[in-house]
Image (cartoon, rainbow, N blue to C red; front, side, top):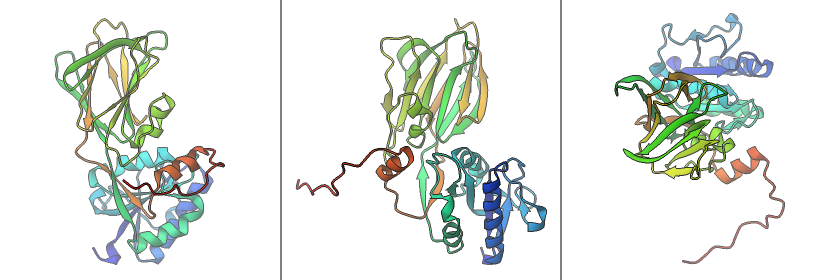
Length: 305
């Protein structure tokens, strides 16, 4: 791919002035460097004027033609960019313009650095585990397939009714209980819904699947950390009078009638994140959650085996 045909996807939250202004800066800089900025067709993801002369994804430029995606916004915008990039395995470089921004590599003040490093192809690509999700009906037929980067959740659809489920791990029954729902999360998603539900924080270098019941009416309903090749099955028991709903990354949903089964396993297609700096996850946790570390005395002494 020559510099004249380098396609860079620019994804920005369209309803925030600062992200729109940031998108304008990125687009102008990419054009000045001889690259071709490409925008999504979704009007919620960018709201820049047509005078910037950009291409539109899907209108002559396919996702497989994209070199990298620069995303301006919070984690929600980055998740939407991951949807757009899924079929092309495009690396995503997130610039946080939201609140916590766990998936972002840089903050808003670092836009110029991000542009320069992308132009120079000066970044590393880290792969993050994703989940493959299936829904089967009462007859065992697959009726819906999707994926998740953060988590797949099975939740009750009616506020006044408890959802009754059976949890199976690798085709073996684990427990049956009534609950508000069940979260199945990746290490990337361990700091999202999983964290809010009382699940463990998992370092990105650890390959694992987290399972967290939500408000379960059961004596044993602890968060579980499972192996990365585990298959989780959540059966919506036939005695449920209402329906449940599957949510993936809070973006894609599917209704779950009584008798439906949700299968969650590791996806063979990871999500690719572009990284500019060595990432120390401990520092990221401290910074994003503003954890108190005022008593730290510096580097710990080395321990001899």
